[in-house]
Amino acid sequence: MSQATGLFDVKLTPQEEMIHPALACMTLDKQFHGDLEGASRGLMLSTSTAVNGSAGYVALEIVSGTLAGCNGCFALQHSGTMNRGSPSLSILVVPDSGTGQLTGLMGKMTIQIASDGKHTYEFDYTLPETK
View 1: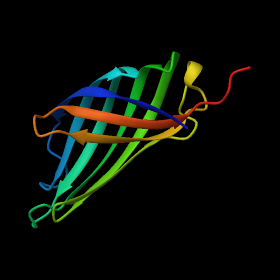
View 2 (view 1 turned 45 degrees about the vertical axis):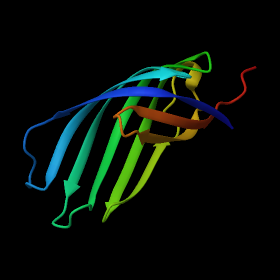
View 3 (view 1 turned 180 degrees about the vertical axis):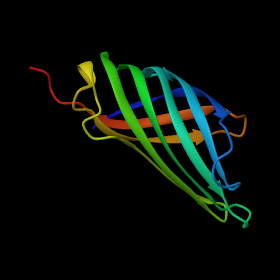
């Protein structure tokens, strides 16, 4: 297993009103810097609750860039919950989503948001050996 780390910038753009006031849909635009250099586009769907600190979101994004000297694209699937302020987040590479030199990529990503607003990632991944 290898690990990539770095910073990323993200822009969230709200979309039209959803089928319920508690639902929100946003587009994601990210720029990755560090061991993963590239950009992603995606969609996020979130919901809030009547309890402060409780919410949930799901998202899919397509990342295009360079990882460990390999070029290609792959998809990330997010599933996050906030249970009365206690966060839980899973970000996984969608199986068989890798293209180009990233074909066969598997892994999971964690993100941190610092108090100054900077976003960092750690990406634990495997790539098949090339012959």
